[in-house]
Image 1: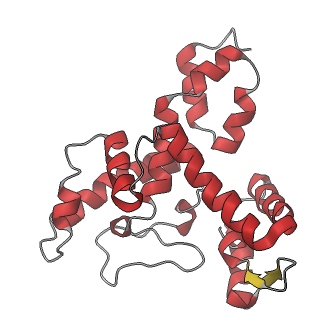
Image 2: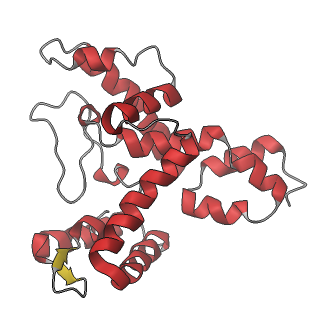
Length: 225
């Protein structure tokens, strides 16, 4: 099959896959690996991981997020924060997320009542990669990050390092549960309903021991839909 599709087709296919699914495609052959493992793909992933934390994006964290009292942008589903439970797929959601970066810059650059409008206005002339690197360095002061390296660093930090520290050997089981639920063909709306009912019923009281005598809440990692 890899010899039938054009290079452009494989590149476009890659953009429709989340990183953990793309990694499987990358292992099929050297040609496909070279085509889908590209700067454009990883710039989009890194942009999502960095810009989702920016307050002016007005994207609520599913478990305990913050939205301004008078938002300037249309309300979007909190599934955008983790890119899970998506009704219209990964590619469309990423395209919409990237457009929201521009929308947030436009909205807050024109909002003269906020002192931070100068900060957002600085990004107007930059492309997606430059915007992401600038915002990342502003918050974390990291030098020399490639887009793939930045995406990998942020993913490992939030999806491996923190939960593994808190939940030790139990984390792989929780991680598998979340991934299996995400990949299940059940419509996304039902996945969101189920997890949100659990969140509303249990809230911050759901915790797990890490084997050292300390309990840690698992809501941040489990209720992500």
